[in-house]
Image 1 (cartoon, rainbow, N blue to C red):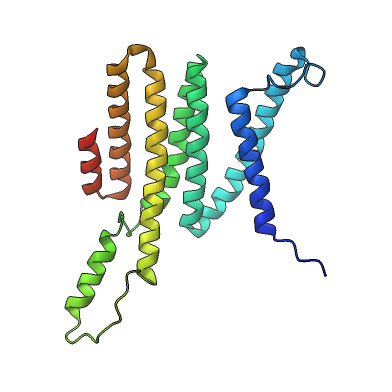
Image 2 (cartoon, rainbow, N blue to C red):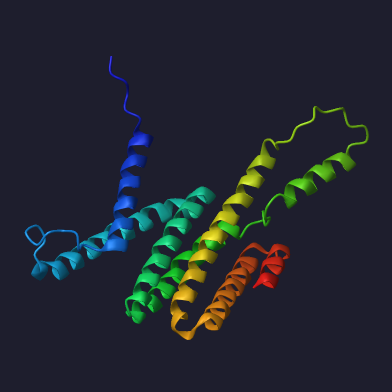
Amino acid sequence: MSKRLNLPIWFGLVSAILILAGIVFTCFGFTFFPSSILPPASLLPWVSGIYGSVLIGWGLTLLLVGRIAFRTKDRSLYFALAIGIALWLAIEAIVSVSTGVLFNAGVDLAVAFLLLGPLLVGLFGDSHRVFGDRHFRGQASRRMTSTPNPEPQPSRLEPVGDERGTLNEGMKRFILFAIIATAAGLAAIDMAWAGGPVARVLALAASLALTCMAFGAATGDYSWVDRIWSIA
């Protein structure tokens, strides 16, 4: 009897292949195609059509999945969309600057503001403005002090229930911050590369400071921002 097809694994493998193909094309372009398969005269029209079709499909995906995310207020969808958009625009901006197409880097910044702004508000703009496990520790402390005679509980190292959900949200926020901060730092270094080492360091510090300010405003938690900002 044949085993049932595992659709999540199938979909994940195909998606991973697409990601690998994107990495190859970003790093090496289409130069490895022989002229018999891809004539040089057809390269620009073909690439233009491919780029347009990707934008159409990607834009439709954002439209449909974004409507579901904002209608259901699903923070997992907010996070997934924000990660994909941030990575897409960061890579495109870096490639645009490195190839001298500066106007497209400006377009990427504008699109990042228009798309990531609502997602960050949806992801962080609620009553659960926490980062890391500070909320978990506070809940545990209040629970112990509010109970007059607490029953002995078995020792555990891992939080359960809502506490684990709080930690997971904090980890997701940190991952999103790390990706956006890294992408912004790489883009800033790339743009300031011609100015020498001092200009690169200043650009990196400025990008990190601006990213910290944005995340602090979105989460309402400035304690961790102050620590990272001091490093910048």
